[in-house]
Amino acid sequence: MGKIHVDHRLIWRNAQDRIVREETFASFALGKPEFDKAAENVEPGVLLTFQHGARIIFRAQG
Image (cartoon, rainbow, N blue to C red; front, side):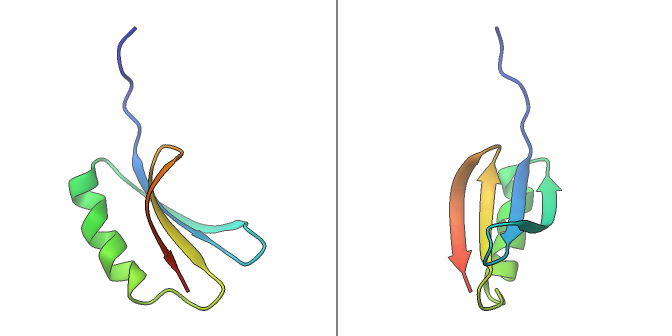
């Protein structure tokens, strides 16, 4: 069996741990700069994660 492609994702979750927004990127190189920008303005009570599939790479808490 070979590897399958899994997108990188920015996911915003509210205080009830529900996904309120999601953006996908084809690669880490495309998604990481977007995470950095979004992490500067995370609203209070919101959790922003940068994930590769289900694996969380970075997180920012508002």
